[in-house]
Length: 282
Image (cartoon, rainbow, N blue to C red; front, top):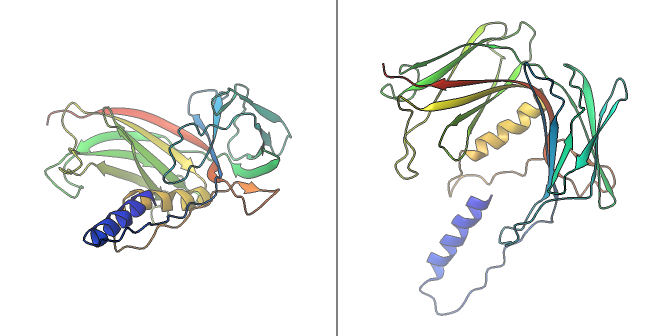
């Protein structure tokens, strides 16, 4: 959305540059909303007891404020079967920490946030993920057969409806790349998921080179979260001047007190496997 506003603003400047009249353009900004970053990720082989939820506020497009942290809220996650409550303690910087969380696969949990007299709730299930069985490099599957790509191999479970989120972060890059996948046509089979970085001279982005170190994370995600993050990943790919405007993507956090004042963000519970791969000379 920000990119589109910048493009429109630039076009307006060009169109009216030769006019003598001064034109004031009023840009509508939406209301300030609570932003919920509640990703409870249980890495395989760990206890998963230490989890963090981050709360902030959305800012106007032309806003100059940088302090959007939300403090003083009440944040509790509940196991829907046992009723056990896990209180996330305010750290005074927008983060809320629990060191006693108990992750259980296929278990439903509920989130409750009380902030400025309003109550936000969400429900999600802790989703499992299979193991990565192999990681290797190649040049054959990508869009450019001269560039290196990484392959992540895993066995999809036999039960249908498994969904995945992949996070690839090359050391030295500012941001990671995200991809989502499903087993609709590959259920119960071995899956070879490949990823490459395309060269972009304008953005100073180079493809993988020998010696590059890539951090890989694979998450098992629920179908509702798959539908949510798939739209966000597609929008992160960029929007041209004549393409449709990205839609506002609502997460699963509902404002019980005032439904119109909904929150941004998502409450998710996922199991994750992590790995590292270093590209080598061939």
